[in-house]
Image (tube, rainbow, N blue to C red):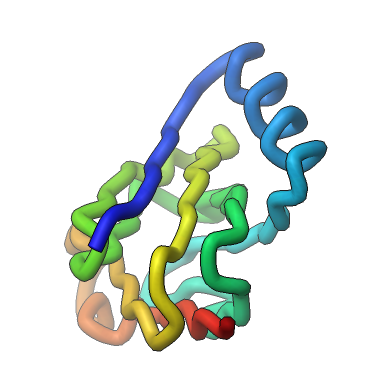
Length: 115
């Protein structure tokens, strides 16, 4: 199973995200706050680049997709962009890996990848 991950910052981040969108990728905005991602269920297409724009509303959070070995920090006050190409249809779980208090274990979500 192969995948692509791009995590960028600054002006290059905006330029690369815009370039990925022009090439047919989908942009999805996700907020992270104590104990939840919103939305926490995202439907995407197989082999179509997805640019995820994370915003942390309260503190530092993590983003991990274990099946694809993808990990990124989500810092408050910044937009974190991660580009993923899902190679196979199915469900890919994600979660926060930076402890944020009681309820942290519920900070999860899933990508549902369709053909």
